Image (cartoon, rainbow, N blue to C red; front, top):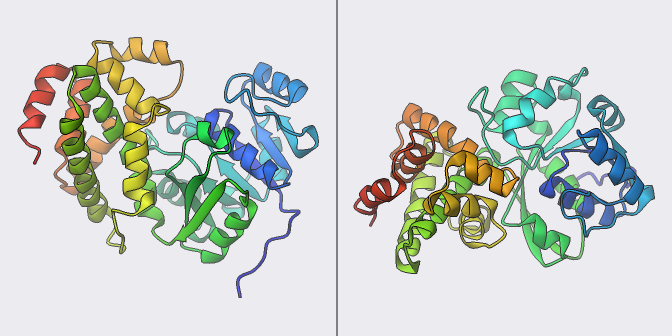
Length: 335
């Protein structure tokens, strides 16, 4: 029988964006107390005083007694047995370096969907190799889900992946709310890579839309993206998986098609002629696919995976190739 976690489990959430805010909502709706790290001092102050995140999902009202907000990461880490990380991957390592106590003593839950630029590793690999975190103390939260729909309490689905079924089951209990359905998987590496790569493919979908490609092309693009993702992940991990399951294909579809998808929106602006900098200024939010595209390209070459869609996004964003000309070449490689 699996161990049942105490309702008094100490939980910290690191991050203050929309996904972090949605995770705090889930945990507090589960009647748990959350120690919440909000890096920006002014944002932390306003969150404390209003019981709302003023910058993201500000319609979500928290019960003051269920959150303790701090802009001191070590204060939150020291008070928490479980750490739920929802910091954009591009900033994660700089935040981890602030922590002055061993992470290997914590149970780490990753809601991050990107490569760590400094190591070109996904979060689980990075924490294992650079912070000596045992794989048995690591859990990944996979989709498909958008923070905005969780804020609206629309029925959403999560996949909890870990090599430790007990920890995944405990997390399932911690996240138990009426608007969530969850399943448990042991494909921790595969699901984390899928959650990362789908952002690149969603960005490709957005570029195609911005260029004026229609639904016929989009269906072919996403079909090829699914197969490309499968090839890539198989090169990394031989773990048995069905790429058509919701944690893989479902997450890809919702990120590629949803109006809530910031990666699709970012790509759409690139397709319409925005520069990368211009799109970033316009959005004022992180599009993980932009940062993931370069690492995904480099990793794909390292492992010898055939990734024409990832290559195309990399060429447009990093090498500043013409979206129109590059997509025309890509269109001839799809089937």
